Image 1 (cartoon, rainbow, N blue to C red):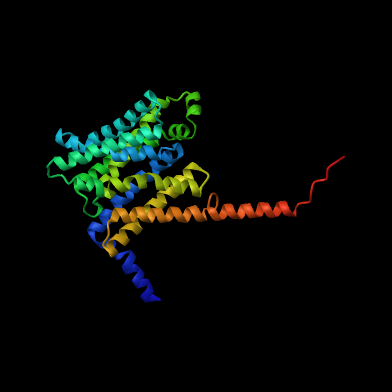
Image 2: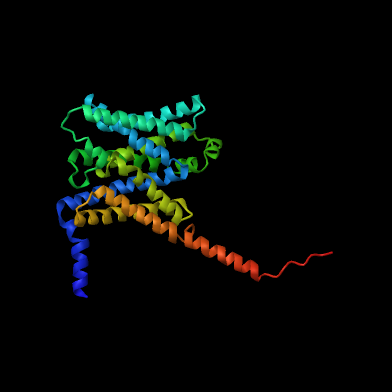
Length: 302
C-alpha cells in the first residue's frame, strides 16, 4: 500500500517541485479562472461563435501593435472587437445572418494575421500565439496574463448582476433601465481580454475551448448561475493540473492536453449530470412511463 501511495505521489506531485512546472501551474490556473468566469456569460448569452471570432481575430492586431511599437494587449483588443463590430455591421447592412458574417470576418482576420506573421521578421515568436508555450512562458507574457485577466475579472465583479441579466434576457435588462449597448461592449471587452490572457499560455487554437467548455460543464451540472460558475472554475483548474501532468510524463503539448482533459470532463458531465445528463434524463423518462402505465384509466362520464 505504501508503495502504491509513493508511486501516486511521484506521478502526481513531484513534477510540480520543478520551478518551470510550478510556474506553469499557477499561470495556467489563473488563466483557467479568467476563462471559466467569462465562459459562463458566453454560454448563457449564446456567444460561443463570438468567442471563436475574437480569439482568431486578435492575431493581426498583435503583429500590427508590435510594428507600431504599442502594447500588444492594445492591438489584440482593438483587432478582436473590430472583427465583431464589422460582423455586426455586415449583418445589419445585408441579408447575411449573424453567424455567417462572423465566420467570414474572423477567417479574414485570421488569414491577414497569418500573412503578416509570415512576412514580418522579428525577435517575437508569433508562433507561440498559435500554439502556446505554457512551460516556457516569459516574464512579459506573465504580466500580460495578469493584467488582461485581472482587468476582465474586475469588469465582471463590478457589473456582475447587470451582465448576468443581459446574458439571460437582454429585453428585460433594457426594460430595467440598463444600457445594453454598454453591457454588450463590456462583455466583448471581457472576451477579448480573456483571449489575450490565454494566448501565450495555451495558444490561439485552444483558447476558444477554454472560453466555452467550462461554462458548458457548469450549465449541465447546476441550475444556478453562480453554482455553475464555481463548478466550471473547478473543472477548468482540474484540467490544467491534469493536462500538465500528462504533458510532462508523455512529452506532449500542455495546451492540447489541457483542452483534451476539459473535453473528457465535458463528456462525463454530459452523460452523468444529475440534472441534464443523458443517464438522468433516461431515468426520468422511464420513471414517467412506468408511472403512466401503473395509473388507472380515467373514467369518462356519459
